[in-house]
Amino acid sequence: MSKRVLERLRAQFGERILETTDFRGDDTAIVAPADWLEVARFVRTDGECLLNQFTDVTAVDYPEREPEQPRFDVVVLARSLEKGHRIRLKTRVADGESLASLFTVWAGCAWGEREVYDMFGIKFDGHPDLRRVLLYEEFVGYPLRKDYPIDRTQPLIPYREDGQFMSKLPPFGQDEGQPWTRINWAARLQGRDQQVSPAIALQQGQRRALSDSTAGDHPESDLGTVEE
Amino acid sequence: MEPIEDELSDEGALELPSEPMRLNMGPSHPAMHGTIRMVLDLDGETVQDLDIQPGYLHRGFEKSCERGTWQQVFPYADRLNYVSPMLNNNGFAQAVEKLLGIKVPERCEYYRVILGEIARICDHLTCNGASAMELGAFTPFLWMLKLRDFLWDILEEETGARMTHSFARIGGMAKEPTANLQRHIEELIPKFERTLAECEDTVLRNRIFLDRMEGVGILGKDRALELGATGVMLRSTGVDYDVRKAHPYSVYDRFDFEIPVGHRGDNYDRFLCRMEEMRQSIRIIRQALAQIPKEGPVSVDDVRVVLPEKPEVYTTIEGTIAHFKLVMEGIKVPPGEVYSFSEAGNGELGFFLVSDGSGTPYRVRCRPPCWFNLNSAHEMLRGGMIADIIPTFGSVNMIGGECDR
Image (cartoon, rainbow over all chains, first blue to last red; front, side):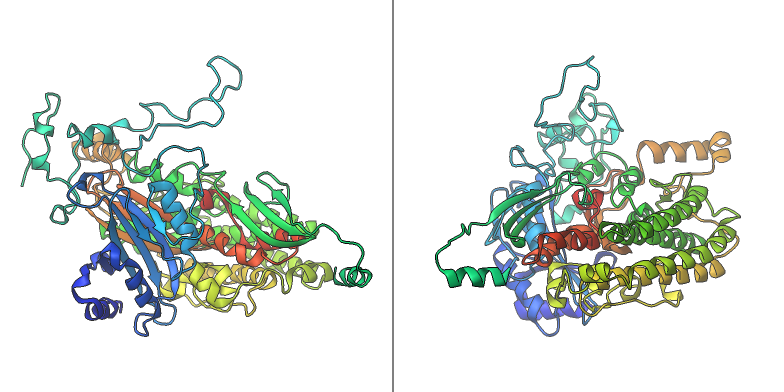
C-alpha cells in the first residue's frame, strides 16, 4: 500500500530521496536535512500520499558514526487517514546542527520536537517554543545521548548524608541491575570497548566493523578474533 | 461578565486594571489527575492562555530500557499506563516479536486479547468514574471502582498481580489461562452490565453533569489529526480510527465489534465513547472466550526466545544453557528498527525499537498516546472557563506514568 508513497516520493524527488527501506513492512525514506521540510510538506499535502495524521517524532543516537557521518537519526512517523498507509521519514543530523521544524506541517510536532530537543539536544529551526519539556531547565546535558552515563543523577535538592532517617538516596548504584549487559559508552567511544555487540547494519555505516575495534587487543578481552 | 462590562463602559469613569492574572494549577492539586502543572493566564474566569508543563513523573523509561535486556523492559512497560498495564505488556511484546519476525501461538493471541480488553475496561472505568466524581457525582465513581476491583480480581487470579502484572513475555505469555477464567468472566458480565447502566442513569440525565460536559472542551477533527491525538480523543471528533479495526493486529480481525464515534468532540462525546467501548470490549471478550483454543502452547517453541520449562532447566544441560543465555545475555534480537503500534487505553501506543543485534535494546521509543492527547488539550482549554479545566482535563485521561515516562 505505502509502496506507492515511496514510489511517488522517488518520482517527485529523485536523487534527493537518499534511500528507501521496507524492513518488516515499515516503509522508510531517508532524506537530507536540507530537504526535510519540503519532503514532509509534500507527503502531507500530496493527493496520493496525504499523510495527514501525525504519529510521532523521535531520534536515535549513533555516536560511533562520527565524524564520518552525522550522529543523530531524526525520525518522523505519519499516517494517512483516508488511505490508511504509514510512512517513516528519516534524516541524519550532526551534533550541533539544527533541523527545520515540522511544526508548520503537523502541529503535533510542537511537543514531539521539544522532547527530542530535551533528550538529544537537537535544535529545530522555526519551532515556536523550543525549551525543555520533561526535564527541568537546570538540567545539564541530554540524557538519551549514548555518552550520557546512565547512573548520573542531577538532584535539585542534594542527597542527605547516609544514616539519616528517611534519607534521599541516589536511585541506583553502579553494579545494580545487570551491569554485564550494559555498554560502557565512555570506554567504547575511546575504542576501549570490552563488550562488543554484534554490529548493526555495517553497510549503512552505523557502526564500526568489529574488526576495526581494538577490543581484541585489550588484555582483558576474550574477543580475540572476529568472525566474518 | 458581559453585562457588567457594558454598565462600566456606560459610566465611563471607572477603569479596572485589565492585566491578566497568572495562576499556577498543580503540580500537586486535588482536582488534577496525576502530577502536572498548568500555568494559566486568566482574564476573570476565562483562560486566555495556558502552558501545560508535564515531566514531574519523568523517570527515564527510555534510558532505563537501554541498560537491561529486552525482557527486562516489561516491568517498566507496566508502569507506563498503570491503569491498564496489560495493554502495555501486549504492545511491547508485539513490537519485539515484529522485530524478531516471530508469530505467537493462537492461544496466546486470544489470551492477550482477553486480558487486554479487561485492562481497557479498567482504564475507561477509572477515567469515566473520575470524570463523574469531579463533577460531584461520587456514587458512580465508587460503583465503577468497585467494578474495577472485581476485574482486578480476575487479573490477579490470572497473573498474580493486581496492577503491575509483567505477565506478557516476548514470544508468549508467562502462564497459560487458568481453568476458571471463563467462569469468572461470565459471572462478572451481568454485574458489569448492570453497574454500567446504573452509572449512566445517575449522570446522563443530570443537569449539572450535562452542562459541564456538553459543548465543553471541543476539539476539531482536522486539528485532532494533525496534533496526533488518537484513541477516544480522536474518535470523539468523528474519526473512526481505532488500530484494532484500521490495522487489525493479533486476532482482532476475527471479532465482530464496533467503533463508537462522537460527532462534536466535546467531553460528553468522550464520556459516551468510553462507555460504549467498554460494552464493545465485553463483546470482544465473549467472542474470544468462545474461540480460544482449550489446549496448546501459549509460547513459541524456541529456546532462543522463551525460557525453557523448569524441569528441563534442572535436568538437562541444553535447558540449563538456554536458561543461562537468556537470563544473562538476553534475547538476541536481529539488527534493525521497527515501529509497532496497538490500541491502548488512551489511543495508539507505539514502540519504535532499534536493535543492534545484542541482548540489550539500542533504543526503545515509546509513543505515548497521552503525550499527544495532552498537547491537544492546549486547544481545548484555551478560551474556556477555569472551572472547565477539570472535566476537560479529566476526559483527556492523562496518565502521568505514560505521559512523562
